Length: 388
Image (tube, rainbow, N blue to C red; front, side, top):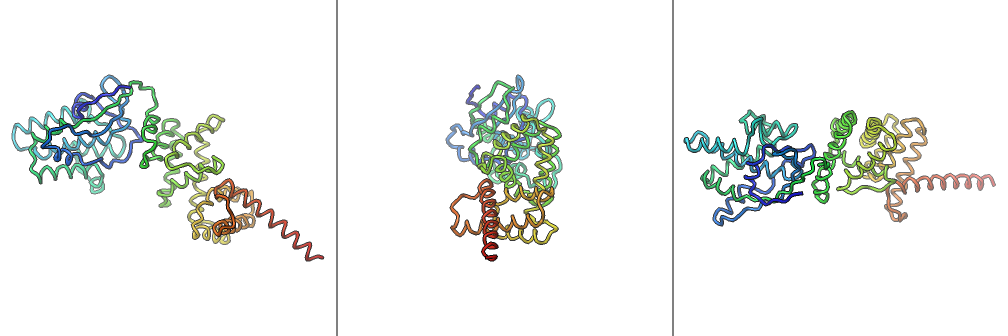
């Protein structure tokens, strides 16, 4: 790995292309770059703009492991300068042409190569494409408009501003080995970041390992989207993974790691990615069914609704297990109702202080089974006493 301290504009100028990844974070821009430059105008000192991690792709292009938003932020500021001073005079037109050639474009397109929806947004911005009202709500367009408005309002000189841009400095770490998994690098660099998008990491991991598995993963995401439960998908992952780990609930920043370990364990045991994700899709359907109390049997529906109304979400891993048994006709509706009654009673007693154990899938299952056995013994005992 090579470490370089350099001007950000110089890094962009000397690089042919930067490629983003599928797992890059959201596109909310970091600290207001233009405001930093305005505040630094009188000092003429370097403006430190953070650390960028790159992985070498070929002789003059890189994959952006971390630092994408910093690169985009500067490119948007440069584009805002072009916007503010276009059609003013020949000198500015010449400067604008140089900015575009050196910092925004290469021989085959934009220097910064994004993916999917963001690629469309970014390329529309720098190519003056027509934007829809929805696209204008994207953080990149909002950042561009903010830069443009500040330059106009403060009547900032293009020459002075560009001179300030040359003072923006970053520390760049370059991983020379292109064979290192960039997803692993990104996760390691951001493991303690509370805003790390764990679901996006999983999506990229599955996409890299199985095309059919990735299609099934998208189906699972769409199940939650169509049920208007996108925000609950993360909680489904918590519950699903806690079942696989015998009741150990992964931490917020460990969802990707836990999923990856589970995935590789199952694949190494001989299960195909398609079968693994198909099974997970079925479990996701059960989760949505439980979350919406969508059962035809009214007695079951009433009990599930009671669990929801009492916010007994800690029971969901167990409910997923018994719902699977019920849906596959391994237990009757009467047994299912009895299990649900015991879930409600167990949690109510635990919350009242009668139980000291910590509730999770593993001990909840064990405690409910013990309670059912005790109830059965008590009923037999009561019956014998009655006969006497």
